[in-house]
Amino acid sequence: MGSINKTPNFFRHKPLFGFDIGKSSLKVTQIALSEETKQSKKSNKAKELKDLKLIGYGATSFDGTAIEDGVIVQPELIAKAAQDLFKNQLVGDITTDRVAMAIPSYRTFTRSIQLPVLPARERAEAVRLEIEQYIPLPIEEMYLDYTIVSESDGTTEVLAVAVPKTIVDSYLELAAIMGLEAVLIESTMSAVGRMFSHDQQSDVTSLIIDFGTVSSDISIYDGGILTTGTVEGGGQVFNNVIQKGLGVSASEAAIIKTKYGLSMSKRQKEIETALEPTLEKIVKEVKRLMRYHSEHYGNDRPIQQIITLGGGANMPGLSDYLTSELRLAARTCDPWRHIDLSGLQPPNLSDRSMYATAIGLSLAPPHGVFK
Image 1 (spheres, rainbow, N blue to C red):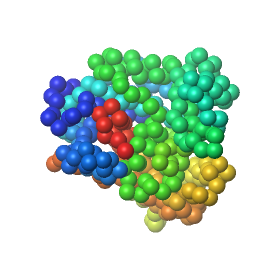
Image 2 (image 1 turned 90 degrees about the vertical axis):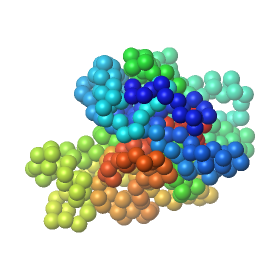
Image 3 (image 1 turned 135 degrees about the vertical axis):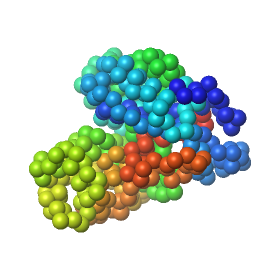
């Protein structure tokens, strides 16, 4: 796995790397604290963490039949692709066998739950009893975890996440086959929220849209993820509807999406007409979450911006479309903005946003790079 046994002197904590498995692609990143940021952290300036040092990154693809309904059914296919990435395609290096992995949010069951203030053991049981009413599988077939969102006026709000054991266990099997120590498995939106915490404008309530391959994860962030939703429509779906609507080949549709998208062009109207049904689904789900936020949190912390990221976020004109439809400023988040590339070649501009989850994973608490 490259020079996996090397341990640079600047690691004060055991390092890990982020391993993001998509529908048929995977992305990896390893990031460490720079010396300057370490000193800031020693001086209790953790909120000012911005200088993150890139160790290595890369992306590759694998046969999509390796995954069925979220379960890795052919781990050897992904392991082979990953090993080739580590040996031949990395920019920089991966220097550790400790890994943080993400399960797609649309394969998890997430719910915000209001509870009275309870002791930890009673709270855990209350969360279990509450969430099992909303999941389609027996609770015994799920792994369940939760985080406390807020506590006030005798009420505790938690964000509970349940994941089928078959999915988590298949990720653990993949890690074992590759000789990796899995130290964290979480949802993609949890990783994205951690990555976004380093953004200069993460101090205002934000609605985040993570455009994946076939679906988009939507969440509301206010110091952490408050609630989430998932809707059909992602980068590959955009390609497919453009291909069908404009009568072009798959490769031509991909070029049209990334070069023209919804921006001004001779075929703008055709592209808009093709994409409109999919975009309307996304806008509808966004509005639903915005109503939920307004009903539950009032106007004390209104949503002030829309953040787009993920592989599908690079479509020209998408942010302008969302701004017009939702009457909120929308912008694409660059997850590399606060990372010191250490002289390494940066990813292509069009590929930057797709590393958001992998970067968020690599910033997980086990090696201390978090906010």
